[in-house]
Amino acid sequence: MWAGGFVSGIGEAAALRGPKARELIEAEPLRELLTDLAEISRASIQDDALDESNESAYAELVEFLRVAAQLAYDTLLPTRELDLTQTDQVH
Image (cartoon, rainbow, N blue to C red; front, side, top):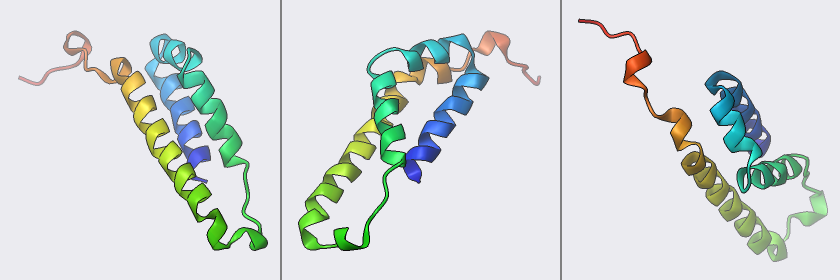
């Protein structure tokens, strides 16, 4: 569920941030990463998958999600930079 929410949030942010954000999202490596996250969001857990042998696979998935979020954050930094020339200032 987290991966699906993350992909949805990136999509909403791209709509709000304009063409620069869309350009960054459509370029590699972010495009591939978002595709992977969309696939992860479709995954489900089976009752027989809750054994200890899958614990390392789960740990790898959690680490992938952590790194993916950091990569997206870093890649989209230019879209978050505040442009003071276009903001209203209160004096």
